[in-house]
Structure formats: C-alpha cells, structure tokens
Amino acid sequence: MYFVDHKNKKIHHQQYAGDKCGFLETPISEREFTASDEYVKSLEGTGQFSFCKECETPQLVM
Image (tube, rainbow, N blue to C red; front, side, top):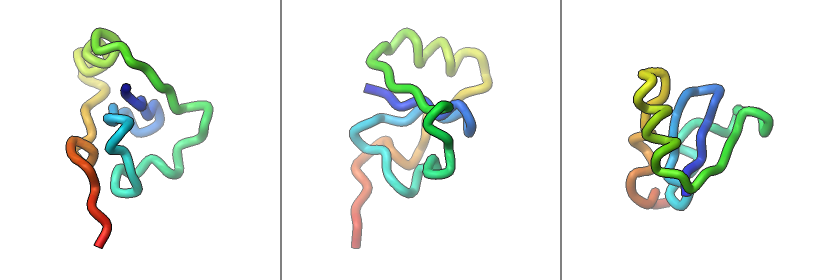
C-alpha cells in the first residue's frame, strides 16, 4: 500500500511512513491511499512526484 501526499508531491510506503516524512501538515483532502503499483509509477513518471526516501525502511525511534 502507498500513501500519496498531493501537497508535497511525495509517494510513501504506507507501512513505513512516519514523522520524518514531513506529511503532518498535509490536509486530509490532499492525502490518498492506494495499492496500485501502476498508479504510483504513473505519478512518478510525470516527473512531479517522487518516492519518499525517509520511508523506504522502518523508522527507528531512539
């Protein structure tokens, strides 16, 4: 599953998304959840969206 942040133009891996990803200020109306690999690849292909580097792996809290 993916979480698409339309405000910041980021695609997050839903299971690893966290505070470091910077989406907390994004309004609910600009958040989207999807399981479609094709859809997120098409968003990335537009050049406007990119995958979030912060949520490629679990975020550790220390």
